[in-house]
Image (cartoon, rainbow, N blue to C red; front, side, top):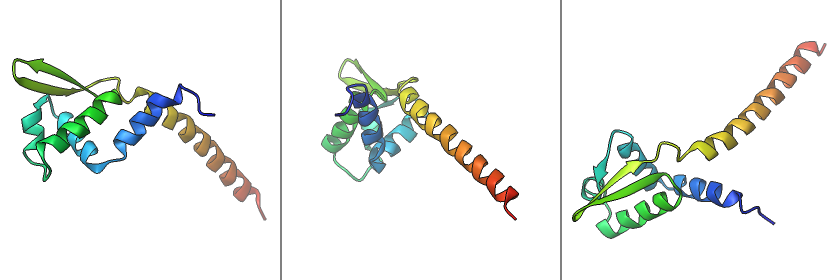
Length: 109
C-alpha cells in the first residue's frame, strides 16, 4: 500500500515527466507570464496548454492569479521542496555507496 504522503510527490514527478510541462516551468523561471504568453511559442492548442497548467498547479509547482480576464502564472517557490528532499536522500545514499566501493577497490590487491 502506498502512503498518502506519497501522493504529492507522485503528482510532482508525474508533472515533471512531460517535456511540455518542463518547458512551461523553464519559461516561468524567467518571470510571470500570462497563459497566452505561455501558449504562443508552443505547437499545441491553448486548450492543451491549459490542461498542462492544470497538472502543474495540482502538483503545487505553479500558481495562477486572475486579473480581470487575464490569468497570470508564476512558479511556486516551494513547489519542488518535497521532490528535492527525496532526491537528496537518495543522492546521499548513492554517494555513500560509491565511497564504500572506492574504498573497497583501493584496498583490493
